[in-house]
Amino acid sequence: MQGKFYLNKAFAFFVLVASILWSQVSMADTSTIKLLVGFPPGGGTDAIARVLAEKMKEALAANVVVENKAGAGGQIAAQALKASPTDGSVLFLSHDHTISILPIVIKNPGFNPSADFIPVVGFATFANGLALSGGTPAKSFNEYLALVRTQGGGKGTVAIPAPASIPEFLVKVIGERYKLDLQSVPYRGSAPMMADMLGNQVPAGLAGVSDFLENHKAGKLRMVAVIGDKRQAAMPEVPTFAELGLPGFEELAYYGLFAPVGTPQAQIDRYSDAISKIIGQAEVKDRLTSMGINVVHMPQRQFANHVRSYTQTWEKIIKNSGFQAQ
Image (cartoon, rainbow, N blue to C red; front, side, top):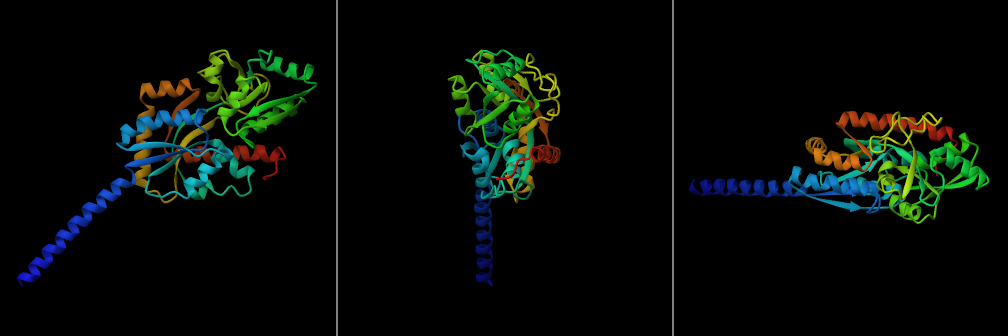
């Protein structure tokens, strides 16, 4: 009888120790959170990720590490997310190109956003826009078109941060609308693209406003047109394409966080709530707005609907352009 008592006591002690160890392991799963970014350091997406990561450390009491897996327009990072643990320790900070556009323009991207990823939370929208390098004499969109006609013989090149991206299709639409032979020059991210624009290696570039804003304000290049149904708060002097006679591009792109399918809903809710509080801070909102994005909280369901609608819109535009998935 006494032996049975000690056996039960030993078993209870074992259960207690096991539960403590399991609790510690569970906590360790997200004591370090890896925030994947699909573009190189120094670009707009990387800068945004580092602002949020800094505040996520405080809000989540965790070590948040930004990991740049640059290349293929975010495809490498997306594939890494698909292969990541589903314990909430890995998140992907991405914009529309990787999530909405790559699966349309690439036959086998190695991931399926709707099947492999969970939209966690949306935190911003942003506009793409056309900018002119400092060495380009044109001061406005119409002057740029005239310059291509007169000095370029109707031919021109426009830098873009990634191939088969929204900027590439916009370049194509602008060329067709104004009967110009505009060719896209794709880069591996906005940072190398900006380096060539600032060095006057290319006369113009089309990318997210956040990529151009700092140098636009410094007078090193000139934004001349943006997507959207209204002008951007960060640069109210720049007209929309619709104002300039090119309607149909009013829907804004998005930024958000994604997790691999299988991530517990409790973790999803935790991250969504944290981001909601973080972007509500005046300091964070001001920093992000200064980068040329529109800060807006989109909870999980709203964000998922936005991603779905945006993807469907651009799928029609891309297919109508005659582009064939590679």
